[in-house]
Image (cartoon, rainbow, N blue to C red; front, top):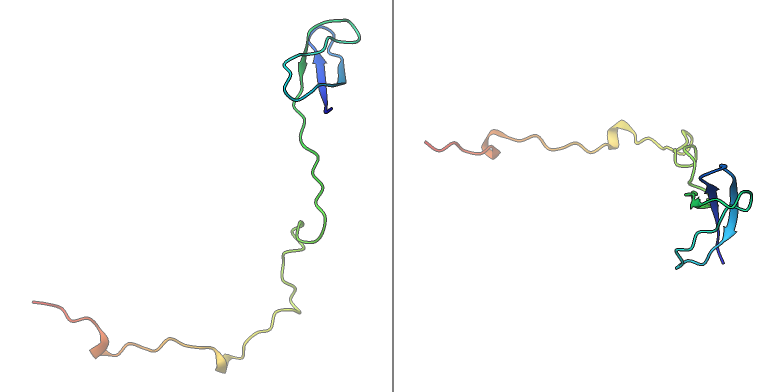
Amino acid sequence: MPRFDFQCFDCGHVFEHEVSFGTRRVPRCPACGGKTEKLIAPPAIHFKGGGFYATDSRVKQNDVKKQPESTKSELPKASPKDSPKKEK
């Protein structure tokens, strides 16, 4: 059964208690017997492997190979006869 955190309205005591998923039953405070509410807790997530840090996704300078200037492709220049004609 899953364990949830509860907090007492009266004394502020925080404790864990096993409660099944579908139930609406809320346990009483073990310290004073007062009413309690279920606390929201973040899920436990463990990231394993590479790619989870800012430094993992960056490209190193040694890995980047620059193309020589002469091999860079250039767009062909448009000639005047290739330009669209204006209608009168």
